[in-house]
Image (tube, rainbow, N blue to C red; front, side, top):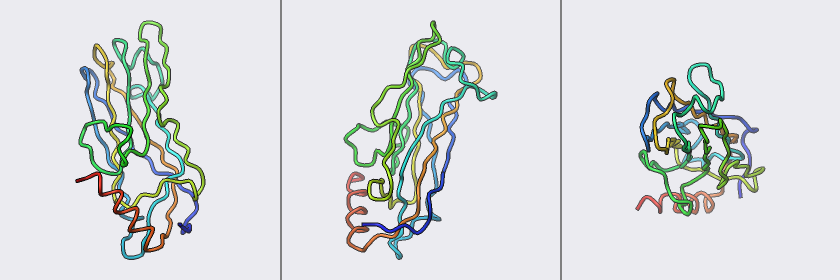
Amino acid sequence: MATSKTGSFWLTETVIIDAGSATTARYEGTIDLGAYVDVGDQQAVAIEQVDFIWQYGTTFGQYLAGMVLDDGALGAQLTDLNPGILYVRADDNNLIASGALNIDHGNNVGSVTNDFFPDVFGKLDESRIIVNDQLYLTVGWDGAGNTGANGIRCTVRIKCRVVKLSTKDWMAIAIQSTAADN
């Protein structure tokens, strides 16, 4: 299906949830793939792995009780079509990766909620092929109260490589990718 043009490399993007953000606050960041995706050459990006990293404030620690003022969850989704600041359902073809960190504020305990996280797709034959020139990171806080005084940072780390597709494969992926936009 695809042949590698590069070895694996990492792309990152960080989104900051503002200090004092109220219930169901959502924020968005973008990752530009324009330098890697080329329609004329049927060049795409193959995603092998996605990690979400949560950090507290300007010290970049992971003190859970400092992140939020009450119990709740921090969520993140990576998509290849822009959902705005909304989360998409798990059956949306544009969802690449998703995860959440549930926080028990009073006991300073966090637990990862599994859906697609951690997202390890594998090597080239198992990777997620992207033909869009942008990726979108949506993060948010869902809880009874506000986030802590120093805000929260969510960093997405994407292990990927540039690949060349056959014309048939390029068209099939492009049609599937844009079909959800209609």
